[in-house]
Structures are given as C-alpha cells and as structure tokens.
Length: 254
Ligand SMILES: Nc1ncnc2c1ncn2[C@@H]1O[C@H](COP(=O)(O)OP(=O)(O)O)[C@@H](O)[C@H]1O
Ligand SMILES: [Mg+2]
Image 1 (spheres, rainbow, N blue to C red):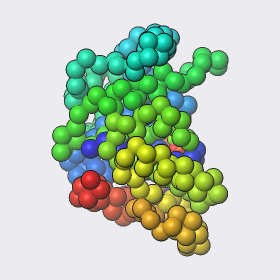
Image 2: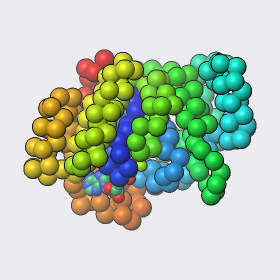
Image 3: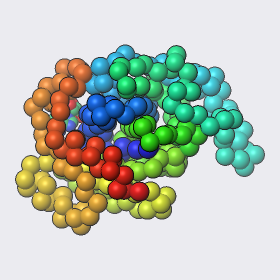
Image 4: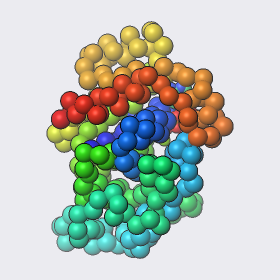
C-alpha cells in the first residue's frame, strides 16, 4: 500500500508520517518512508536516522534530470525513468538509511541558494511511486512538501490513498477544499487527519469539512512537541495513530 501525506506547512505531516511509520513497523510491516519534501530536513531525525543521500543523484543529479524532463516535454512525452518495475528491496542501499524495519529515502533536497526549481524532484517522485510495487506486507509513506504542488506534478498518481493533515486554521480548511477536488479528480480515496485541535477546534473543523472523510483527530501532545523542538527521535505512541494504523491494516479504504 502506498500512502501520500499532504497538508499545509507546519500542520504536522512529517510528525504524523514518523509516528505512523513506527506504529506500522511495530506491527511487522516493511515500511519505506519517502521524504519528498525538498526543503525540510527534519523527518529523518524524527525517525532516528541520518539524512539519506538524495535519490536524485542515482539518476545523474538535478541538472541531468531537469534536461531529461525538458527533453520529454519538448517531445510531448511523459518522462519515464525506470525500465523495470521495482520492489522496495530494489532501491539501491546507498540511497536509503535503515532502522529496524523502516527504510528512509529522500527524493532530493534543495541544498544551495539559487539552485533552481524543484520540478525534477516532483517528476522523479511521480516516476518512482508509479513504478514501485508493494506486497501486502509493505507500506510506503510519502511525506510531501507543503501545499498542492505535488498534485500538479502528479505525485499522487502512484499512491493508493491520500491523507491530508489539518491544523485548526483557515488555511488548512481552504487547502482541504482544493485537495478534496484534486484527489477526486485523480480517483484516489482520501481522508482528513485533524491535528492539534482542542474541543472547539475539532467542532469548528468538523463543521467546515462537512463531517465527511475524517479519519482521526490527534491531540496536541507535550511529548511530541518536546521531541520536535529538540530535533529528537519521536518515540511517542498515541492511540489516535494506532487507530489510523488499524484503518490501514483493515484495507477498508479500497
Ligand atoms: N500533535 C502534536 N502535538 C504537539 N506538537 C506537534 C504535533 N504535531 C506536530 N507538532 C509539532 O509541530 C511542528 C510542525 O510539525 P511538522 O510535522 O514538522 O509539520 P509539517 O511536516 O506539516 O511541516 C513540529 O515542531 C512538531 O513537533
Ligand atoms: Mg514536514
């Protein structure tokens, strides 16, 4: 199963990705976390591993990929980067870091000022996710950059389900309308996860979302906050995360 996690900046995407990865790994799943946010360097810390080398380098680096993308665009083709279908185990070890049964990879990061746009990374993420096949014991979690650009790049195409994380804010509600529309167009099952909302926040958000597709509401947790603030590994188990895992395991979304 391939799960895309999206939402606005700071809503809690990476935090929830990390907690979900740990929860599902404990249940015996082979978990691959794909860090597809080119401008954030926090997810690997939350998972307690080092920063993996940019997978983009495997395909010759950003410039090379950008040229291939441009060439395909000029020919009117869609970029196709892989010849054969991959399993998680086919990802070259040099581009993953592993801890117990969680593997982490990063599509590519923006390392330098003025190095250009992130389009090649989006194209690579889309190619990788449409190409990779999962078994019933595998779970791929894709942590995306803030907003909806990844939809423009078609990253959701290879995923089986989209989870949107919302904090209690006007921006999250507006973004949810857009994301609902885009996932419906893409024909993907899609669910909301409310994060850090108190009782009033939950009520307001439920109403704004029309009370549909809400999978879980994760409370503000002092332990999560402290680990996040210190840049430490997240070793917090929350019952709400377990209920999301139950849902994924049950397969009732498909
Ligand atoms: N449920 C929560 N309780 C407490 N702090 C949280 C919670 N969810 C996220 N945070 C904190 O909020 C900040 C932003 O979360 P993060 O996962 O990095 O957001 P995103 O990936 O969406 O940009 C982090 O410092 C994180 O520790
Ligand atoms: Mg993040």
